[in-house]
Image (tube, rainbow, N blue to C red):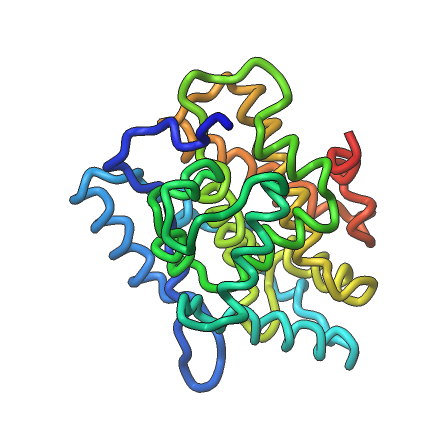
Length: 271
């Protein structure tokens, strides 16, 4: 089994969402994110400045009255964002074991702390260190991808497509970053998004409760396609993820996009 952890060991590409609660409304703390970026620079880690760039200019016309179904589904999604990863919880441990089995069905996992985890693209022997940055939803996203689109999941995990760099992005940690990117892009910690991308996502929720998880899988495919198109290597991950965010934001802002299956990149899941 080839390791996905072909990277400089003391570099950290994990982003933390720093979800804060204020007046019982969910929102991101810009100061906290900026502080995280500064701390990562100080420690020689990957710079995360692209998350500090503004999304599509806010405009009141994107405020929408959500139907009861959308409100319920948005609330359940927001509740998922608040669940921290707890390595002592049996259900969280089981989710990680299930993820391992999906990735390597013929390889026995020796323990919750094991050097084997690096083969999936975690940065160390204990994946919880990476997962804490975005919470349990990031594990749920990876597991959904593995179970719902197994061919896509394994194609990305094993880097099957295209001419690859000698220094590839670590798969699992890339997934953590994609989860965080989507949460921020869609403004999910607000009661109502004021962006075109967020507004269209609310349409997706009306059609499909698992819209966020499906969009995550699409975004992962988009990121890998951009990686190949840009001939990227390990240190270009920040640039590739920013390009993916901008592309996804444009696609989500198209007026004719009413269902998640209308997204141009949806077909990437079935290559």
